[in-house]
Amino acid sequence: MGLTKDFFIFLSQNKALNSGAKRWGLKLGAQSVVAGTNIDEMIESVRELNRHGISATIDNLGEFVYEREEAIEARDQILNVIEAIHENKVDAHISLKPTQLGLDIDYGFCQDNLREIVAKAYEHHIFINFDMEDYGHLQPSFDLIDELSREYDNIGTVIQAYFYQSEENIKKYKDYRLRIVKGAYKEPENLAYQDKKDIDRNYIQLIEYHLLHGKFTSIATHDHHVISHVKNFVKKNNIPKDKFEFQMLYGFRKELQLQLAKEGYNFCTYVPFGTDWYGYFMRRLAERPQNLNLVLKQTFNKKTNTMIGIGAGAFLLGRLSKGKKQKKA
Image 1 (cartoon, one colour):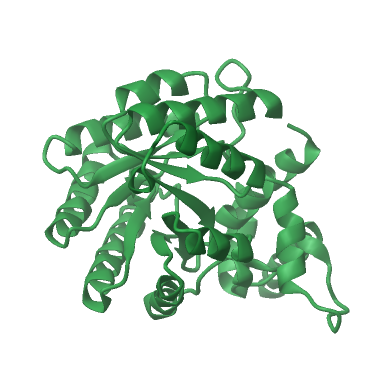
Image 2: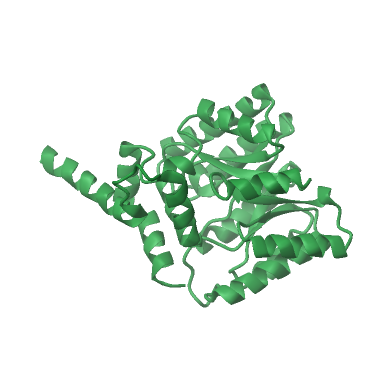
């Protein structure tokens, strides 16, 4: 996968940097790819997308929670987001991570939190997407989906193309609304493809299968080659546009997002918000190194003489955090 991906994944898992990022706010370019730190800022960002015919899936940032209080706080915040979507009548749904709701604390506790969220969303006809995380949380997340979908039908999930088992999973969950991604975590070679060509090949195969056999397909990519392939594939196979959508991350390839929406394709932007942005941001850079260039181009201009790059910025964040600790000592 290369040093760059490993480097950014390492940064995403660094607790000291995550903690420092919360204190120092949306620095180092993240302000261009995270839609604010609170619900009001996020809703205004979604409204702007809606004005251009683009829907949103909203992610209240946070994951790998190990305290019940944090999980309850995340649950309540997501419930508030659901109410905000309903009250403001914006075109949006929810993406969430089971670990943020307590999966690493207690399975039953997490399930109760998720049930409350899904039930509230069901009342307001709002879709809930379960984001998939690293392999260790994969099967428990699928188990939660299986159990909650017996009660509610407003649930979907994510299939990650780098896992060998993804072909099996996409067939099992073909009657669900699915977002298909390449994958953003570091996984061992006995579980996941390591070569980009293998991942890309599997990604296309998964997309094609679900377009032909599935309920609804969310194609999450910034790659214009993949987008062109999908356009040709759906035309050749007479797949209607209401059976799929393209998805991209907030702040990335804005012109292409607008172009696809203008062409009449369903388009959905993944809109993250909140203070716990650092891990998300680093994994976006790990997923696709080109994202670093996109962020730098969008964040800095000719008048900016202090551009230090994301990697150097992470180092600076660490130094700032260390400095704070030394002063306290």
